[in-house]
Length: 375
Ligand SMILES: Cc1cc2nc3c(=O)[nH]c(=O)nc-3n(C[C@H](O)[C@H](O)[C@H](O)COP(=O)(O)OP(=O)(O)OC[C@H]3O[C@@H](n4cnc5c(N)ncnc54)[C@H](O)[C@@H]3O)c2cc1C
Image 1 (cartoon, rainbow, N blue to C red):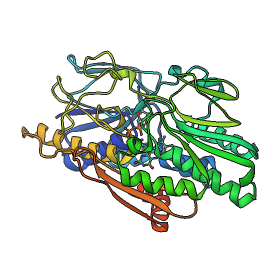
Image 2: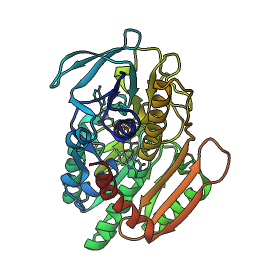
Image 3: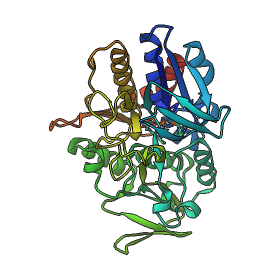
């Protein structure tokens, strides 16, 4: 009998648990520990901020879904991991103490390093959880004129919601007849080409920005924020009346002391999703050290690969599945078109870029599809 422990109940952890439940016979035990029983469907948070869906549409209770699939669920914090003794210290939850494991999957997501931007906590909005998206939504409701600035901080790895926020605000103001009163600027710490990893994708995005009079300010690395202005590392200043930033990301602090991470705290893995330097330990999702943006569909694919390989390992086999690093997303232009981009990050080939109303529609249906197939 093997005890498999999964840390983190997001896209990567949930998919890994489901695949393991399908693959492993009943004698094996699967346990998932997550700090909240709520699964958050992050791609819905821009729509939540703009009042296009309800909080209940952006998250759902994991426990029943997992129990139905014979996965034990523990709502608690994974505080400390001992990869040699193979024990995880569980705190602040329904169970406390040390949980032994034979196999482990890290799926702890990212840490928001807001402390790296002076004044972020006090003066910037973000939408990286349900409460913050709702708070940002209240600020949007009160905003009728002035300048809106949206962007990523250096080290953030998530451009899609920034672009979608700009489109959603432009659309909202157009509908209310207030568009002329507001200047919308998207700031990027690098360029759109590097954020999207593709020239063709950047051309399509810039065209769509132009159509909605959204300005683009590349190479603008915000380092500090006050009540009404943001400043870069080189002293450039931008004033705002509404600010939403994606803060810098770092790997989970639960893994940072184990000697398995890079300088930013992301876990080093091979293409079988095995943690380099430790046996019987895997990692998936935003917490792993792969280049490029951090996206849900990558976490899902990595969760599948890890589960297949872990099941094979229990049976004494070599890895049966390998991950290839593909970027695939839709930028919803809020009401009209959507831009679809798909690219193999590990290959030097141009992306496939498509633009049509279909993609916006497809993205909105994603959450229903996810909930139906995982609850
Ligand atoms: C606003 C927004 C929009 C996005 N839009 C898209 C999109 O359009 N397309 C796309 O592909 N991706 C999108 N993403 C990215 C996508 O949501 C992430 O890549 C995905 O959530 C990563 O999955 P994960 O399982 O690695 O981490 P998460 O989903 O973050 O899950 C990590 C889990 O671990 C838990 N956890 C963390 N630390 C601990 C601990 N110490 N103890 C116990 N539990 C812990 C957390 O509570 C959480 O449940 C978006 C993200 C955001 C924020």
